[in-house]
Every structure is written in C-alpha cells, then in structure tokens.
Amino acid sequence: MSFMFFMPPMSLMGGGCLEDAGKEVKKLGLKKALVVTDKVLVKINLVDNLTKVLEKNGIEFVIYDETKPNPTVTNVNNGLKILKDNNCDFVISFGGGSPHDCAKGIALLATNGGDIKDYEGVNRSAKPQLPLVAVNTTAGTASEMTIFSIITNEDTHVKMALVDKHMTPIIAVNDPNLMEAMPKGLTAATGMDALTHAIEAYVSTAATPITDACAIQAIKLIVKNLKNAVDNGKDKEARDKMAYAEYLAGMAFNNASLGYVHAMAHQLGGFYDLPHGVCNAILLPHVEEYNSQVVSGKLSEIAGFMGEDTKGLSEKEGAKKAIEAIKKLSKSVNIPKGLAELDVKEKDFKVLAENALKDACGLTNPKQPTLEDVIEIFKRSM
Image (cartoon, rainbow, N blue to C red):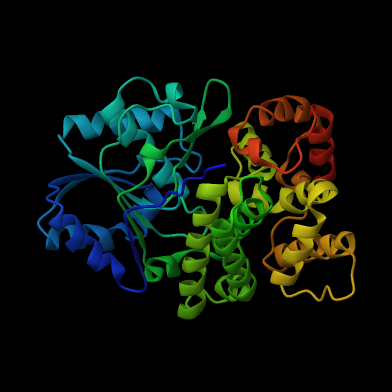
C-alpha cells in the first residue's frame, strides 16, 4: 500500500520569523493580499504586527475581519467578494484555525469557482487554490499547514470537512511571539486540540512510521509545556515548544488523518457553536476508551509518551493509564469536565451521531462505531 505526505513548501518557525515571512512573500512577486482574520485580533492590535511587515516590504493589502469562531459558508462568500472587488492576487490568513479555514475556502473558490459546499469531502477540487500564506497565532489547530478546512453550513448546522491537497498553504508561519497574547482558556483549548491531533493520528488506521514519529514528539512536548504555557503566557520557552508541538501534530494528522473525536466534535461545534478544542478535550478520553478495544497496545505506548509508568502492566492496563493521563492533563488546564457544562442536550444525540457517522475524519478511526456506539460515547462524555 502506498502513502502520500503533505506539508507546505516552506515553514517558518521561531521567535521573530514573521519578519522573514514578509521577505519571502516579496521574493515570490505577490502584490496585494486579502488578509483574513477576526475582529478580536484587530481590536487588540495583533494584526498590526502583520500589516507593518507588509508595508515594510511594499505589499498592498485589504483586511477581511468578519471570520467567526466556527467559520461559515457566508464568511467564505463575503471574503471572496472582497478579494475579487480589490483584485487581490493572494491570501494571508492571520489567527488560529478559524481564519485559516475561512481563508482556504476563499482561496479555493477564487480559482475553482462554484460553491464551497461543492468541495465537502476528499480532494474535490480540480485546481490549486490562490497562493495562501498562513500566519498562526495559536498553538493548536495546525490549519496553517494542513490540507483540512472545516466550514459550517448555516442551513444544516453541520460542520463540513473539506480535505483537499490543493488547500495546502505555500508558507506556514509559526512565530511564538504572536502567541503570547493568547488568553489562558484559548491556550488550554488549542493545546488539547493539538494533543487530540497527535493521539488520533497515532492510533489511525493510516498511520506510518513518519506520522508516528511526529505524533510521539508532539505528545511529549505538549505534556511538558502546555500547563506552563497556560499558567504563564509570557513563558517564551513554553510558547516556543507548543508552537513546535502543534506543528508536529499537524504533520501527523495531515497525513494519517484523524478519528471519531473530531468527527463528533465537528457536530457539537456546528450544532451548538461551541469551541472546537474544548469539545475535543472532553471527547478524547471517551473515544479512546472505546478505541482501546482494538488499539490497547498503542494507547499503552501513549501512556509512556505522557510520562506514565507502564512497566509490568498489561496493554489494557496501560491503555487505562493513557486515558487517565489525558483526563489529568485536561483537568490541570481547567477544561470543563463534561458536555453538560457546555449545555449540550441528550435529546440531540441521535442527530449529532448520525452526522458524525458521515464525517470524513471518522474513516481512519481504528474501530468503526455504530450509531448506538456514537450515542453512547456522547452520553459518557456528559
């Protein structure tokens, strides 16, 4: 069986690398950018870090800051109109997963046409998107370097998973200096999102030695640095290590894909407009408990990567240690205990489960659940 490995042609890492990004964009001869971001990042003046670099390098830009936390079809369409009206020749996403995902939708439609709904699923586009430079301000989603984009269909309240090799950004920028502004709650949620990426990739049916290596290192870095990044946002070492961790986790799941944590979390986010990382963190131990029926050995290994002593334990006992370690880390960074705290309703479980079974992210879960299985996992996560 053959495998493909996707990542951006260029990735810039380390404190101050945003300055290098401006120089690299200039070398490419790109002239005018649509900057896709959100109002909060504009309000706290974080976007100024980007616009100053663009001005310094003689690159024109127009800002679209309407991106919602769970970006919508309308967000994509409105951004595309601004791009066309202003004759932009490339896109820059600035922020976390939401601006990146929205920007991918805009850039893809700019060259392929049609409606973003047409591209739900795997590799549905015919042409590469408009050049996209993704400047990351969170350490979690890895959308700045992946082939994934999640867009909410407002009509159905379903998060559509678009998995397309043509959506890979041409430059990914992870400057930890930009991440110091992240509040504690967002740092925790995005960090647990990255952990979910690494763990789901490690137990995925499409895992390879390359994706395993990325996932293992990501898990180790997250366990060692997430709490420090949450407790002290100005801890430069913790921020730097979390930036590497989320990128490594992205390399893992970008090529091994994900599982039912994401398939289920997407439904919660689309239906209730809930934060993606928090949903992942709550679901993760319960989905892996279900998966332990078939991958207890891999989960036992994960317990070791998380610093747990598994010497002398059976694979099943080791798997339990991993699940306990996930819960312990989640609690230490103040993630809600269960979905009930997010006002999720049990009466909605059937429709949520039905939609989760259609999500492309579930295809590589190590054990394929029934509708009843998914409903039961939702119940256990309350």
